[in-house]
Length: 392
Ligand code: RFL
Ligand code: PHB
Image (cartoon, rainbow, N blue to C red; front, side, top):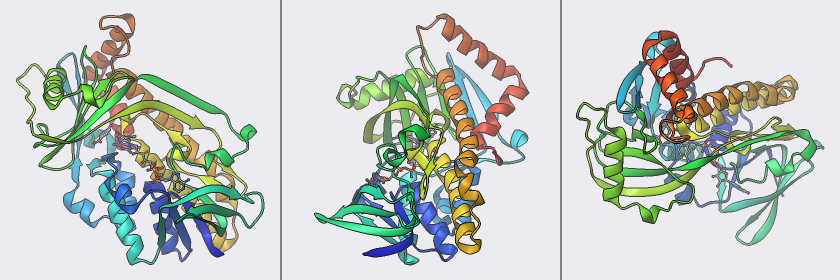
């Protein structure tokens, strides 16, 4: 039976970041990942990295390609009823900014670095249950190649996403659960088309929300608000481009560059949260414990922020026998998670079609947008949350 100091479930941003930080401190971990390597490095998801996240990837020595190929943004556009305003970050955040770099690219970079540094990742190895979390010798039972195996460890880090098994091993009475299912989803596309804007555009339109993002000078990433029962098959390439043109129109001749669409998928929008992320020797991080709707670009960044606390707490325990960081782990993470829950909910309800165009709710959205357009204070609140608060 294998034994490591920290058994990690999940090779997403949370699990990989944890393994790399622990390795630097001389702590042995092993990652169990139920998907294949190919699947994990091709899974299209996030693109917006906060400055804190980028700084950590650089400190870990996995930021080389991100620095070369990623794109720094120093502002963002918000558009409402075809009127576009710009929110600059620098003047409100002491020069902090965001970086646009695909999640699958950083995941690929981290997986390669793990291999170079001798961190073992078992792909196509599915954790089925976790045992002994109330003892000082927990273990993860997993299946690999049809055989059941056991990984013994001192601690278990469940970095296994929203559908993982980690959360199911917390005692039911140890947490409260909070959940919002929004009545809309995002249709997301990737296209070989030069981005038509230098910075992201979040747009409210009476037909629904649209977001213009990008991955490189040649690849655009775009999203449309659709209903929860909508299907990718209902959206021909032409219909997608036409609708994006309508929703992103800024009244000043804005036109998208069209190109071949090579990825199309629909993602439901939800906010989800539990207010305890640990039990005994089991610690949850990232999407395993919380989901935010992607309108604020916070999910991956929160996963990495959790790992900052968890890695520091584990290192203090292994090096000094100090368990203070482990004891306050949930509390430390939850402050930032609640801040991001609030900001993501704010951005979602400000920019999506929440009710009939012209309704009371819609007038309040418009009132907020009009206020943002004239208030430096409101602009600053958005800028510092969007870039990610340094503390909290
Ligand atoms: P992940 O990435 O889901 O990784 C969990 C891993 O665990 C594996 N797993 C298991 N392995 C072994 N045994 C089991 N029993 C297992 N169960 C699960 C899974 O296969 C997987 O590999 O969680 P992590 O590490 O917490 O990272 C979270 C982020 O992936 C997520 O929050 C972001 O993608 C959210 N998100 C965004 N976040 C941002 O910070 N900025 C963005 O711009 C942004 N845009 C987005 C997004 C998510 C989106 N979708 C598709 C949900 C845009 C979209 C459209
Ligand atoms: C993305 O580029 O995929 C992206 C950017 C900003 C968001 C969500 C997704 O808020």
